[in-house]
Length: 419
Image (tube, rainbow, N blue to C red; front, top):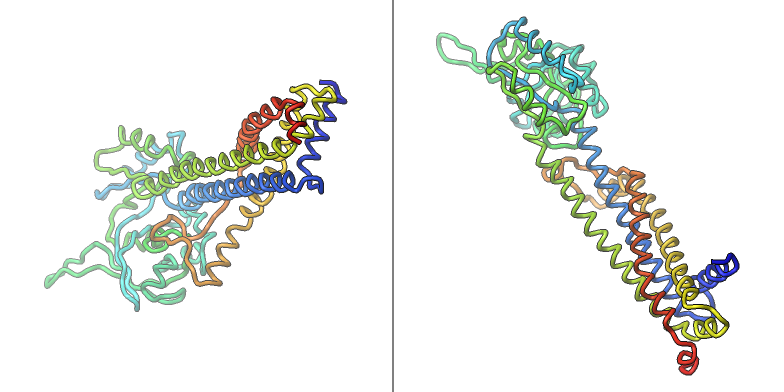
C-alpha cells in the first residue's frame, strides 16, 4: 500500500474512533466497545494476578516453612545409624537442605483450653532451614527460642485459642508415659512462650509448635539424637517423585511423608481454579470482542454515505476494508491499554484494598478454615500480561474482519440512493 493511502486509512480510522459532533452514534459505539474491552482486560489481569499470588504464597511461604519430605522412625537408632542415612541423603542432588529434628504429636494446654499439635524440636544449626518462619513472628523470634531451653514458639491462632501470650507459660503434654509403681503418668512440662507467629495458614497457625531439640528429647524420653529428618528440595513440586526414589533405599524402619499428603489437594485446587477462572474470563473477553463486532456493524451502517463517497472518489474495496480494520485495531489498542493500566493498578493495591474492606466493615473475605491463606495476595507476571495483550488483539482482529468486509461490499449507488 502506498504511504499516502496508508495515511488516509489511518486518518479516517482515527476520525471514526474519536469523539466528534458529526455522529454521536459512532462516538457512543466506539466508547462502548472501548469500555467493554477495558473492563474485561482489567478483570482478567486482576484475577490472574491474584491467582498467581496464591501460587506464590503456597510455594514461597507455606512450602518455605513446612518440610517438603519428612523421614521419620519409631525406632531408637544410634547416632551412627542416623549418620549413615544423612550421608546417603547428602549425596542426592535434588535436596536443598537436610535438618535432623525431633517430631511428635502432643497437646498444649493454657488458661483457655487445650489443643493437639505437631511438635518440632529444632536447634540453632538445623533451624537455618526454618529461617523463613522468622519473618512471620508477631512477637519474639527464633533466636529467642534458641536462647531458652524450655521455650516454645506457637502460632498466633493457637495462642488465642488456649489463652496465652508471649511471656506466659503453657503446659506441653507428650505422648510418652512415665511408668511408676502406682499408675502410668503423662509426661508434661511447663514451657515459656517466647514468641508467636502468624503465617495465615490454619495448618501452621493452629497446629505448629517449635521447641528446642534437647527439650523435645527430654519431654518425649527419646534416647536417639532425633527421630526424623526434614528435607527441603530445589523443586517442591517434585516431592512425590523424590519420595519414591528415597523409598527404594532407606531402611524399612523409616516412613516417608511428602508435603502433598496434607497440602497437595489445596495446591492442586488452586492450580485447577486458576485454569477454570482464566477460561471463564477469556470468555468474558470474547463477549467484549463480540460487542466490538456489533459496534462496528452499527458504525458501518451509520457511515454508509461516507463509504459510498469514498468509493465514488476511487477508493477500492480493499481500502475500505483497511479503514475499518484500522478502526477496530485502534479500539482494541485503546481498550487494552486502559484495561492493562487499571488491571495492573488494581493488582498492585488489591491486598491493601481487601485489608481495608475487612477492617472497615468487619468482614472476612478469606477464611483459613477454607483457604490455605487468610489474606488476598497478588503477583503480576510479565508473561500473563503478554498473553493477555496478544490474545485480546487476536480476538479484536478476528472480530473486525466481518464488519470491515461488510463495509467493503457496500455499493455506492445504492448507498447514496438511500441517503
